[in-house]
Image (tube, rainbow over all chains, first blue to last red; front, side, top):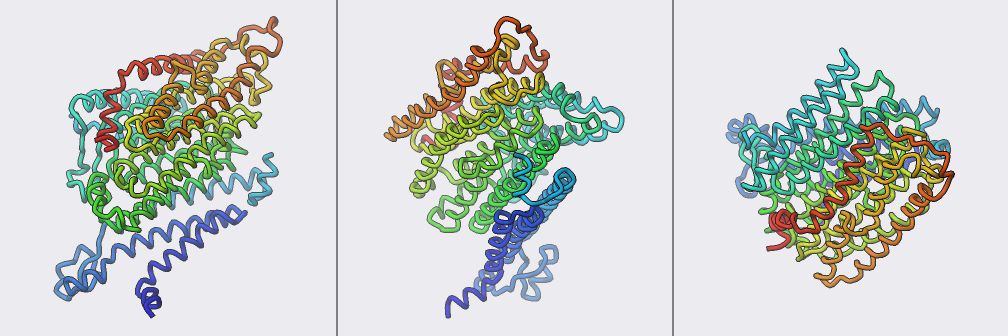
Length: 133
Length: 494
C-alpha cells in the first residue's frame, strides 16, 4: 500500500528515473550515431524535469503554511490571497541555461554527423571503426 | 579596480572571441593576433591577481551586486589564482606555437573560426578557475568543452568520429555533474560553494548528498579521462589538430581535475570523505590501477601521439590518487603541484611530437630513427621531458612522485610507493624506446640539421627549461608556503 502511494505521490520523480535510464541506455548501447544523440537528449531532458520537480515545493508548504504550491513568483502576492504559494524560480532559470547548453550540444552533434556521413557514407559506429582502422 | 579583475579576465576573453569572428570578415590573419594580445593582457591581469591574493587573501566578487546565496559569486583564492595562471601560461605558449601548425593543417577560410573557438575555449577554462558557483562552473565547463569538440573536429575525417565520441561521453559526464548539482540543490537549496560547504556539514549522513557526491565524481572522472572512463581520450588526442592537442592535453585536462578538487575539498570537505572512506579508498585503488594500466597501454602503442595520450591517462591517475590521502598536506600538495608539473611535461612532449608531424609527417616511433642529429634541440627537449616523466631528480616529475611517497609514508599506506616505483619503471620502458630510436638508430653521418621554426621550438625549449627550474623551485621548498595555504584553505590540514 505504502509503496503504491509513494509511487503515485512522487510520479514525477519516478518518470525522471525512467527517462534518465532510457536516455543513458540509448546513448551508450546503440551503434547508430543518431540514436545515440536522441538518447543523450532524453537523458538531459530528464535532468531538467528533475530540476522542475524540485522547484515545486508542494507538500512541505501545505503542511507548514497551509498553502498550495504553484503560482509564478512574479504574481505571488495575488497567489497567496487565493491560498497558493509560489514555486522556487531558481531551478527554472537553471533549466533555461541547461536547455541552451543542450541545444548547442545537439547542434554540434548534428553538424558532426552530417560531416561524418559525407565523409564515410555511414552512421553506424561499428562500420566507422572498421573504416578508420 | 583589483576586486573587479576576476570578472574582467573572463569578460575580455569572451568579447575577444566574438571580435575575432567579426574580424574574420576583413582579415583572415587578424584573429591570431587578437587572440594572442588578449591572452597576454589576461596573463598580466592574472599575474597581478596572483600577487595580490598571495599578499591579501582571497577576492570575492558579487556579479551584478547580488548577494552570494542568490547571486553568482566569483571567488579567487590561492588555488584559483594558481590555476588561472596555469591556464593562461599554457594558453599563451600554445597560441605562440599554434600559428605555423594552423597555417599548415587548417584551410585558410577556417582560420577566423579556429581562433574564435580557441579563444572561447580559453574563456571557458578561465571562467572555471574564477567561479565560486556550482552551476556557473557547469556552464563554463560546457563552454570550454563545446569549443573543444569543435576544435578537435577541425582536423577533418578521422577527427569527426573522435570528436563525436568525445562529445557523447563528455556530455554524459557533464550531465552527471548537473545531476549531482540537482541533488545537492534539492538538499541544501544553494549553489554557492562556500554556502553549500556550510549547509552540507549538517547533512553528511543523508543518502541524497552521498548520491550527489558519487554523481559529481563520475561526471568529472569521465571529463578528465580517469581509467575506466578514458575511452574517448586517445582518439581525441591523436586525431585533433596539433595546436589543439597541446591545449587540451594541458590546460583542458587540468581544468577538469581542478573542478574535481574544488568540488571534493571546497564543497564536500574532508570530514565528509572520512564518513565515506570506503568509497574514497576504492577510488584510490581505481586511480592506482589507472596509473599502472595507462602505462601498460602506452607501451603497446606504435603511434607517438597515442602513446602520450595513454601516458596522460596514467597521470590523471596520479592526480586522483594524490587527492585520496587525507590528514596530510603532502597528498593535496602533490595533486596541486601535478596540475602544473604534468602540464609542463605534456606540453613539451606534445609540442615536439607535433613538430615531427609538422616537419616530416612522422607519426610512428619507428620513423624517428636518426632524428637526434637532424633536430637536436627538439630531441633534447623531448628527452628532458621524458626524463621528468620517468621521475628522475631534480625534474618536476620527481617532485610529484616524492610528494605522493611522503604522503603514503605519513598515512601508512605503503602499497602506493610500489605503485609509484612500478609506474616509473613502466614509463622508462616506453620513453626509452623513443629516446633509443631518436639517438641510436638510423644513419648518423649524412643527416643535415633541419630544425623546427623558432616560434615552435622556443616554447618547447622554454618548457623543457621549466621542467628543471620548477623541479628545483619545488624541491628548494620555496613553493611550500603557498601549498600550505592551499591545504589550509581547502581544510585538508587544520
